[in-house]
Image 1 (cartoon, rainbow, N blue to C red):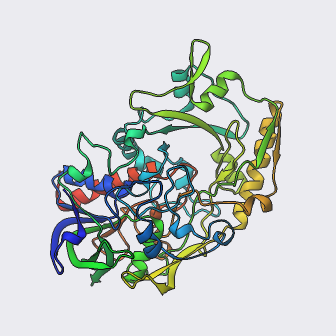
Image 2 (tube, rainbow, N blue to C red):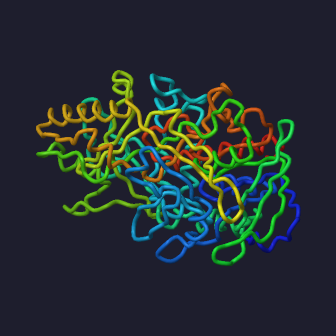
Length: 492
């Protein structure tokens, strides 16, 4: 059921078993599975119910409610990071305030995180779970996303495409699957033939979380408000949601802000810290002179099969496509003390794993929004010496490996690359998972340390970024969270 918050009476109280705040892939995945199991679920979204037009229709509200201050690396490259609108013609974009969240613009690129991503190593804290713990959930995520199975090995895909796996010294060949276009937007796609808005979940759009009311280690209720249709918008109604369990699924920036606004889960000053991303260079900064791959190897990296004698982009009946990347092996990452990165076979942008930095963070700004009077966001994005080492070491490793195959690699300096880096839409960290409450915000089950019924979903819980796009792991963790909540409530 889909309804609008402004139609809910002022002062009303809504009782539910689970309330999920945020309707991106994290929130909708958990909501779908919970309602399917017979759990009473309320899913709230601050934005409207559908995107449309050339620009994000939430722009008037988002420019007011998501505004704030973005500094550090943002000052040079993305000063409007917090409120960048959605542009259907193709980027730039960052955050969404609409039903479906960032699934409205993601490209569907999917691959699990690597085992090393969960391990503690110099500069990277490790997770309180390992890759093996997530294996069955990755399989379920692949099924939910209608991928072409859950096998991402290059050898399997070389056989499917009748191609060959390249061999670069010090590098793994990694394969990514892309969701079919009909399944990208989680608000409009169907699950078992039904959209989330037509399911048994109570979906309320135009419902902005104002306050998390907690007492003695438990969330007692959520204060929620709607907006009217005026320009600029004003508060219309205010109501309360009382739930046995609450899940924040608003993205890494807003998850942290909501906890800070209510002074929840921050006993050890960890909320908002370790804001990370996958920094992406502005255009081509790496060039390759000469050929270093055979035609069958090139086809694997481009996700192409032969039709007659002609290479053609492969896709299956659900529209799934594939492509390949080169990434340093786990052994090389450990040996060099660096993060991971991508190298495209025939394209020179650079994309890498940012190291956790406690001073790269979300805090509250001194300014307040003009609709609800809440403090706005102050976000500081800071890179570190380890990020510089990652760039220098991985490009040298790539240069050496490609040189062995008879080609040359040319790279811009780190200083030149750094000044053009953008976040690239992947917002990670700020409520990271940890076994020790002094080192993070949520535990291995995504429950906020010190509270018995508040959980956080999404990539804000990642302890490190890895190099894979985060959404597939976000969906995976939400499946795991939904099953955990079912267990707590005695659902099958």
